[in-house]
Image 1 (cartoon, rainbow, N blue to C red):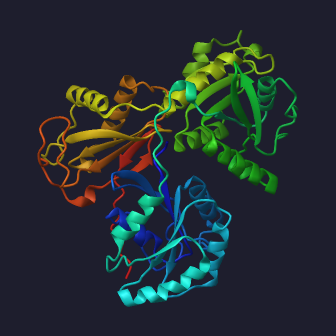
Image 2 (cartoon, one colour):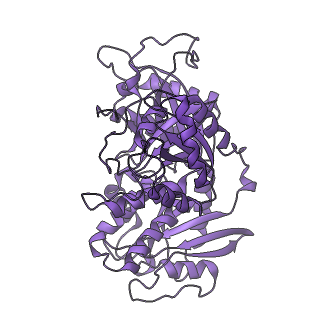
Image 3 (tube, helix red, strand yellow):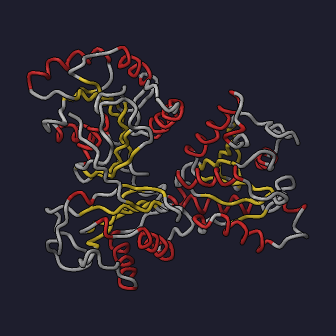
Length: 485
């Protein structure tokens, strides 16, 4: 399974970013008394009781953004809730229960996920009694905490760890669950025709009029005795062209389908140049770490005018961060190469669920570093102590190091590229974290057990961020913002 996500939500100014920083042990999110400071989701990899999980900070629910970004903030919150395994619902003991807290609780009643009610700003034990008023919200176990006084942090982390989903045992290739395939692309590239070919029935309306499909539609079909779900998504338009409510919801449902799918088939029209909409879609697929195949459709109408190698070069030059993505040339209307495409999609699905043993991973990593060691940082030697895989879909690696910020972006891209050449899942996204080794952790799979050569300031902790490689490299996100009073 993927690394579990713990999402922090609540109304503005209850201290969500303070709790995010407090749990992370770093000042990563800006903290301010002004509502609406946090807009985008922020993610931090956390370890507790030998479990890894991602903490996700979100904007305040119900905030009226001064820059007219309220709609986008709400969208980011909903994305975070959809992907959450555990939800931290944060309230403010000092200000008491407000109507907006009740609105948030009402929104959470529709969500069948573990909820932990976090009563923040309970600076002393006698304030825990005041926190009892929030039991009326009826949302999950209540934990009274104070980021300012550092109260009950371990209690909160214990509650979170207890509610994380159980780690799934690795599955063999014959026991794969039903694969969900999102079929995406701009308008009129032949997605619905392709779905009808898969289902061997006219399940979708097919028309030369762009925009016939207005919603994401699931179509179940079988091939060689195996069941699949194809998700036909609306063709996307440039954001400046999204003028109606139908266009708006079609766009969001298409993005939601990408997030929920196991595989994405990114369709291109062989007779058309790659557009800005195509680039936006590919970026979204990359941001969500989804296995992908570039599908050049209607190839029967164009194969005599351009060789496949030229189109493949065109795609790789346009999307250099997706150089690992395979390319298929099909004719959706006749079914040419469709079965081969589905077989390849299933192979990528298996790759995304693959695991590699810790011993084998560290052997590979040792060879990678021996071939090209990281350069000195401020006259000090960056060191990797060991690596472990902590999740699948996408395969997620954590490297324990002495100085995370000493590993440059270019070197992180080298690591990912080298991993891709050596691991048994070369065609799927890889997520990589660099994390400072704890002082009590003396493991060193590259040599003898011992203390780090250099103990750097704990502020070297890093967060994942998409870079131009198309995978999750790790960059410094330390912010010197003021702490909340």
